[in-house]
Image (cartoon, rainbow, N blue to C red; front, side, top):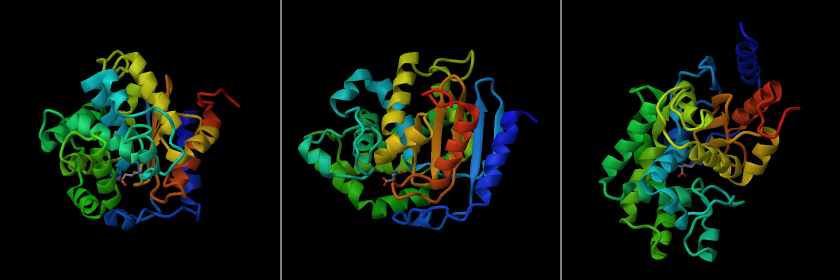
Length: 310
Ligand code: GLN
């Protein structure tokens, strides 16, 4: 067994024994029903080795991790023009905050807070029916993960639609500033369905490979995005991927990462590994409590932090 295989196994074993696992999200009812004892970890290395531990093959709701793939899709459609509608600065606010939008005239701070992701969904909807836009995103993710089994959990999508009053408010508010082009319910439909995509850690780590390989699908494989775009998406994940805890995540883990309220985190060690972790219990900022701890252990032991070893 390699050192990395042993490390992945040991981290999962440590996490399994911890009692303080955070709180599962309750504002989306199906997420409230998920057992907080789950823990999964998958590390895909630059050489293509795949290390799995715990519940790495159990699907979960990727939620806001979908924002990484939706952003990649939107940049492919409109390129740099995206940045006239959404910023690139950390918000310092919660993922579903509305306060900055008034001061900043309906331009969200970044593509990873909900407001920004709604603008991205609106961009991806242009020229399409909502069903086509979400189908394109799903096909893109399946291609990246090399797995056609990835699907949308319709029950989660419906629950979000029924309870997403804040997101509905955000979309309508931005519409009033002219920063949502479509009928808000159509843009929201795309957003709710992308959040309801279910994946396991293995599928997610595989889908993240293009961000460790400088934009290539896999080593020597097709180009998914220009190298510069991959670098910039990583930069946004590092600075904005954990909302108002992005600074703390950089401090503790030091890797570009994107969290979701389903308890998943996709983390990228550029040139080294694509990592997915899942533990449904969240900390006060809405990020996976044990997922963050597991990544901290992994980064400490491997020296993968983008800020250097030690
Ligand atoms: N679907 C969730 C929401 O819009 C996504 C939030 C998240 O994962 N942080 O509230």
